[in-house]
Length: 259
Image (cartoon, rainbow, N blue to C red; front, side):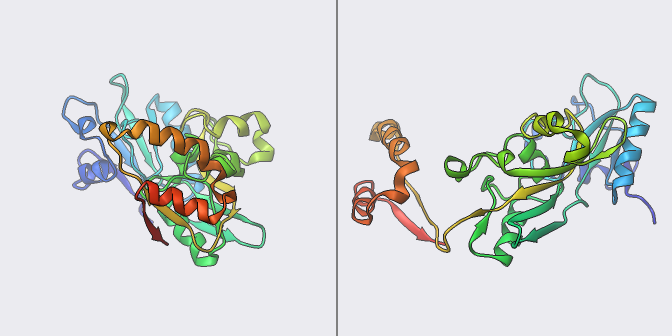
C-alpha cells in the first residue's frame, strides 16, 4: 500500500494544504509552507512520523482535520522546515450506549460525532461545540466549550480515557500515561504533550426534544442588559414554571425552533 505522502512537487499538495484552512492570511507566499504533508493510516505511521521528525530535526505540525483559524496546524514556525501530520483518515466513531461512552478518533469532526450518537440514541449527547467542522482532536485539547457546559462542564471534563503518541513514539492510554499527563492533555492545547489518536468521552442525558432560540439585540436596543438578564436565568431555565418561560420568550420576541 502506498502511504499518502505529499511533497511540494505533488500536484495535490496545495489543495490538501488549503483543504481546512479558514484564515487565508496563512496561505500567502510570505508564510513558510511545510516540506511534507503526511496522512497516516494507522498508529504505527504516527509513531514513525514522530521518531523521524526528531531524528531529522523537522518541526511537526499536527492537524486533526477540522478548521484552524490560527494556522498552527499547517504553517511552519520560525522559518524551520516542517512536516504536517494530517489525521484526516483517523475518523472512526464507536458509540456504546450501554456504557454511556464513545471512542472518537482525532480526525472526526464535531458534526460527525453528534450525528453518530444521534443514530444510536435520541436521549444521549456529548458536551462540545455546535460548529460541525471542528476537528474533535483539537477541540477537546482546547477545552471544548459548548451550550451544555453550564450543566455538564466542558468537553474536556467528560473525557474518561485517551490514546496518544508521546514524543518518543510510544502509544499511551490513561493508565500508562499517568494522571498528570491525562490532566494536561485535556485543555492544554494540541500538540503540546503528545499527538492525540483518540478520545473516550462520557455521554450525557438529554431530552428527546430540545428547544433552541435566538434573541437578536443591538447595543442601541439595550442588548447588554438582555444578555445580563439571560446569564442570571439561563442555568435555571429547566426549573422555571412553563408559564414563566413563555412570558420570557414573548417579552424578548423569541422565535422558537423545535429540533
